[in-house]
Length: 193
Image (tube, rainbow, N blue to C red; front, side, top):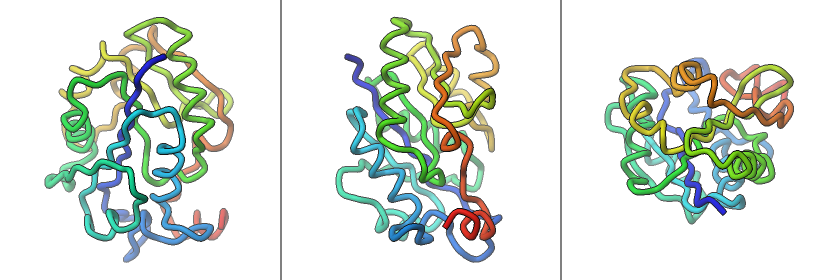
């Protein structure tokens, strides 16, 4: 059994949502980010770190008990800093799953499917990517062999570049529509509310 930790990225400015912070917008009775955090806490993830940034106090207030918190003071510089902050909060841990705070259709079962695929692989360099059909999505689980590459990311660059550079390490797990469904705009909330 692998002791996998999770990083939920929740630092962004939600620019496409207009004046509202998408992560604290209510969807199906709870703030969007809470759905993701509750799924992570209900899964086999051993620790769950939420990286906050923009409107930190509101995002933190939306989270359930049990999450560890870290703040990315440089959140305006992009996603790479949030990934690093999450990694530092989980030093000595691994593998790590990176989840996005705006993907509320991800369930504990989906997360556990990725963990099981990692364990079955028996590889420290495995990268397990959630997919919807042939399309890569999120979350993504990284074996420890990729931690240095994740820490070296810079600017508004997510972990996809590490996945693309290590295609021979990728294992895909089809979890359906949840892997690609994020909520970035008011229209997305309206369509899926």
